[in-house]
Image: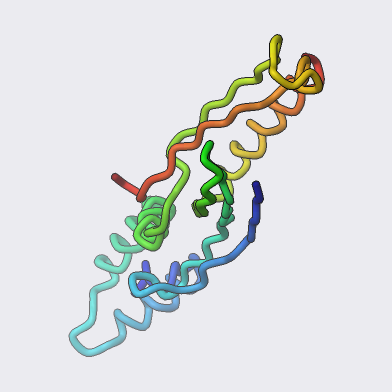
Length: 66
Length: 94
């Protein structure tokens, strides 16, 4: 139903003072068959996000050709 | 201290030199060993520390397929390609 994303950089944590870790957070609003809406959130590292993006690019390409 | 600050080679050298000059500090041989260890393992150690900071859901797996409806109750939905995506979310490391 809806998709939100943000790109963040974790600067510091309790285990590491200089983390400097970039990540992407995505939140999906999903409607199940009954119409009930749930929100799902997840975090990806940049390499994981690149793979995520690549999968959708492939899907888009297939959707074009069908 | 070295891992927490994710020291680069300049910072490392300055830090270790300061440690060798301290009372009850390390020897220059020990400094050399520590420097070598950090140079070899810095990336892995940093990645491990990053891993410890990821406690929300992560994307564990993703599958997809594209369907084409050949029959439907609603005529306008026929021959519309649809992408169906399955995402597996879970806690890091589980």
